[in-house]
Amino acid sequence: MKAVRIHEFGGPEVLRYEDVPDPVLRKDHVLVRVRACAMNHLDLWIRKGLPGVPLPHILGSDIAGEIVEVGDYVKNFHSGQRVLLAPMVFCGHCAKCGAGLQNECAEFSVLGNRVDGGYCELIAVPVSNVIPLPDSLDFIKAASVPLVFTTAWHMLVGRAGIQPGQTVLVLGANSGVGIAAIQVAKLFGAIVIATAGSELKMAKARALGADHVIDHYKQKISAEVRRITNKEGVDIVIEHVGVATWEESLKSLKPAGTLVTCGATSGFDAKIDLRFLFVRQLNLLGSFMGTMGELHDVMKLVFSGTLKPVIDKVFPLQEARAAHEYLESSEMFGKVVLTV
Image (tube, rainbow, N blue to C red):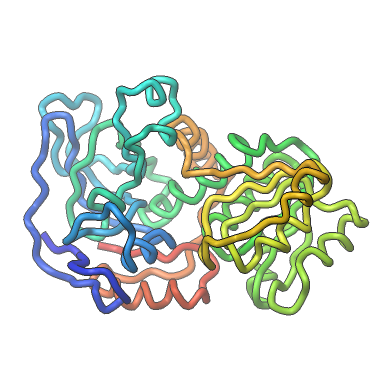
């Protein structure tokens, strides 16, 4: 089959479109022909170099396609069926997995990280990762959902425990997580303040449902939040930017407010004055992907049209290098997707 692999870590130039052996189908696995693979910032981090990633390696966590073949032990799926793949990788037999907390499994990862992902024509996955795809959702939109919407759902619902009527600050409205978080927060009746870096992105954030939008290049986030909330601050901050916004995110919280973070695209070395933390009784929460149950909750809302993926640009698989360069430019509003 054709695939895009990295044989070394580095810039977009390390991505190679090449022939690789077809995957071997196990009896409890399903072989899927990849039709679309949505990109995530995780792809950039892995390409640049993350520990535990074997080389050569195939990137790509969010995959939709058609079943080519099923293993002998697989029931209820058939050749030609349209499917979406859950991006989670977990052991399936530890106490955490048994409790439905797959993202707390010691072996938890995602497709395209420690195991090969979807920048390829064929992929074999455990049957537990396979979700039937209705005809109403095309492959490109379907592939744009799992990682970012499950992450946003876990951040807001699973970790922060969002309540109706709360005020939520969403950093980076143009990102996959930002777009999903705006929609999930509005689903719970929250007042949403989002940040974006251009007039076009600000307009698109409003169209998604954001009640207020801050230009994070021209305005001071915490000052604008105080103005919008009559100096109260927000109940929840959805943080995934890192060092560049960390201090402003903390200053935007009301007393006993919650900051939940799932990443750090601008750097990991964020600092905090502990006096500020305990005097204001703030809650700082980490969040990593989500559970299979949360993914299924999200997909029901996507299949019903309640939550909607946003597509920015589509590239053919052989142009993965150009797609990486585009994603790194941060010009997008929505998902960047590779088609096969």
